[in-house]
Length: 177
Image (cartoon, rainbow, N blue to C red; front, side, top):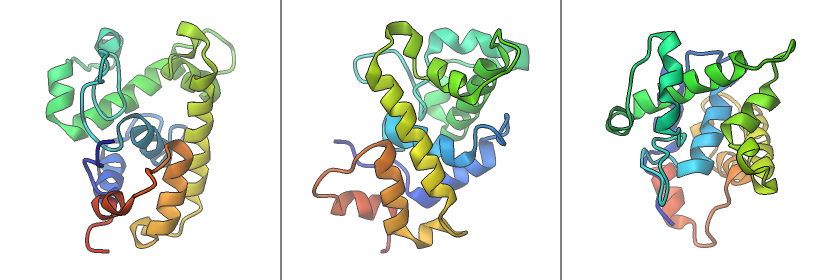
């Protein structure tokens, strides 16, 4: 299992500074949950697949962001964690705004983001449930959440479990503690 590429404080700052699109619907805490579950805060290409970045966005979908004035590619996403956050934010916006229903839904957007309609796999719904549980738990932590590492770890584990020997993970997520 790969160690986190960024500390929790670094990831929190990256998301806070770069989640501009519909952030009131797709909160910073939700993006943090997605990034933890997808890559454990590593801005990487998908192992055995084509998705890239912190949020594992498919390069074949990047053309959909042109309507927002965004032209990018996998290399640009992998070169900049800030850009990886921005692209995830834009892509969630696109998935939300492109819904063909009268009422747009956060839940529907997350199903589309997770690829649920590709194979209707139950594990994808479970991943979404984990993201949302993590989001709610992170939102319950007082300001300066990095001062509460046990609460943060508990929240993150709702999106993706920690290995049994998580001392290395703790040190990577909360340096100096």
